[in-house]
Length: 482
Image (cartoon, helix red, strand yellow):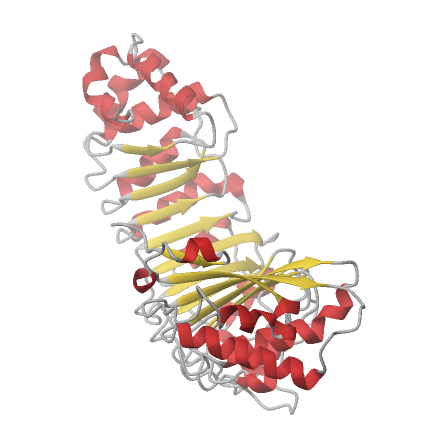
């Protein structure tokens, strides 16, 4: 399927050659000072821009040059506001169906503090003009921006990245709580999630239509205090929850009321969070019937807490949406006990996609996982190793052993993605070929980050070796098609 056409407005000699009526997204290079002074509007009112229309455009990306200097502005605040409004009205007149606006600032000049109000006003007016249509708030910058929160209303989606203080976006979400359907906020650090739930007046905020909540911190700094908001019901119909940061509540605030609707869960687990979920029985056997995809990163679980063993913790993680067909399990707290814990997968035969990134698995672990999950189609692991070869079995006779012991299995197994390189690529190549013998329907391997031609060259070399020469015709399916 061909990609959607895009149009870039910045050079008159290019504009005349474009199929305006087909463009789905516009890219506009604009100078903030030209907008403020009215020069940008004059340009759009002249040939070849005059009369241009983009009836199919749904999105506009503004590459906006911002001058961070302390020089006096040439126009008065009233003139600037009038010029901004007229420019935005003209853009929206050219593309009346736009429902998404993205702003990417290009900051020039040393005085970053000077740009906050002027730039924020321009961005706010851009967002205001499409307030009744579905769109994203997207802002990527490490500089301060003071949005005119009072003029941005009826938002449907907030999607932003802030290298600095992201609290104004959380405040923006609060002000638009009644209309929002999704909230995606990424910050470098110091995101205060509790301010999503509790407003300045001390009352709880409810987001009655939000289906997706995704909060991410690049640098997560643990908070010692975790408030409990008994009685709050912030996300009653939430379907997708992604928390790539510390869970900042002492109770089940974010999980309250949405057990029947939640379909996707991705979260960072630490000791207090695991204990809270366990003691509050947030994920009981009969709860969350719609949960289809669960990914738990346990890197923050440095002790087992209320769990007697790694097996107990693994059982707890697997019982979070026990019927979910897509699973991600990362960094189990006691990786030395991983092998016996893998046997618990047998009770979750519904799993179709599995990511196990807790530690390098040996080949026999991987074979055991595929064998106990008959519906498994996609597996992602760290680089496998060849250890604990069965007694009396030499490496040269491993293909015969695998065929006798494991074949046939993995009827639906299609893809194995291998992450990171811990050992020689030749070891990985041998493991891949042995897996292919056991899983006759498997045809696609995503090797670890390396020189692909070198990796598949190793596969070719092994196919010509004494160990695999007999099985080479059936194993060549793993090699890329020329």
